[in-house]
Image (tube, rainbow, N blue to C red):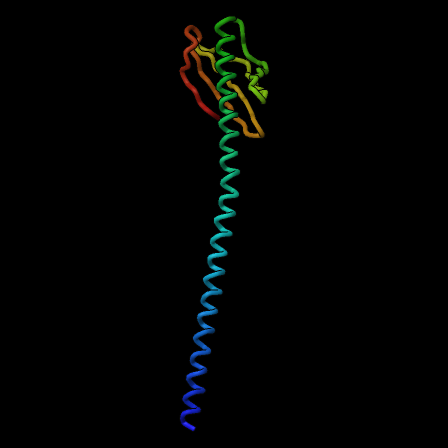
Length: 141
């Protein structure tokens, strides 16, 4: 009789340890699944951040090119006063820039150039010396 009680007690003890191992493996599995899903979502959104950075770089390059073209037009013609759209042609994209009307004050020219690419905008505000057309100040707004 004592042997039967001991055998039943030992059998219950073994059964409960298997339950703990099974529950532990299920919990660890869910934790690993949550970690993998978190990393997948993170890498998915990082892709869009990189794409946004590339668009911003393209927008800035277009504004910089329009600034260079504007200074070249001013060097060729002293009466050039901005206030127009400039188109920059690339291999597969046409960039459009807006050059605002110049303000000339005390030997300095103040103007801004606005460019956009895929709804990412860049506006550059420049201060340039009237005589030498050297850039005194350059600021992205």
